[in-house]
Image 1 (cartoon, rainbow, N blue to C red):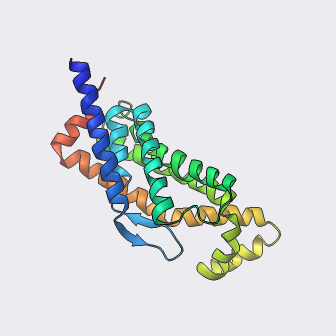
Image 2: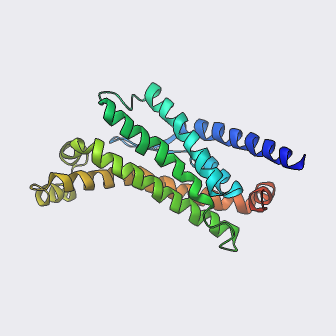
Image 3: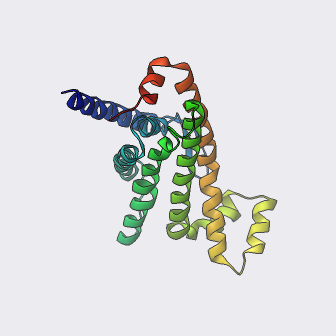
Length: 217
């Protein structure tokens, strides 16, 4: 009976965190003119689940969250507009399913680092980096054609001019640099903010800390 109760509690908490994550993802703290935005800790709820119940459960939760974000991306931002069927499949996998699944890695250091705040924060950073790598791959493969526009119209400065000159004969390299910069612009600050929020949450809210740090079966 206790096991069934624990499973019900886990499912209920996971559902609540998924809903909270979706709601927070709609709150844009800052939106960049070149694309991408910083949200109100939208990654944190899934990361909380990953730390509370472990990486495998966190990855599955992130996968479901990725499906929800894909639905929002298709209906609210036309994320797949103008793409071929193959590109849509690739974008769906890298930018949504794989990218958001990575948020479950936030529990990677639970039990390995004694200080839970440090373990959670480090896990959040690793999870954010893993998500960034998924977006970087997608940006290179499916959106690399935007690289020239990005460096000549959207992101114009001496640095971008230098990049254009140095990669004139290497369009593939330009696409990699474009994807790396484009995704870092919003994901680096988002990850930093999330890590700070993670430390505050687990350090200053005793009921949350108790639930997150105890062993779950």
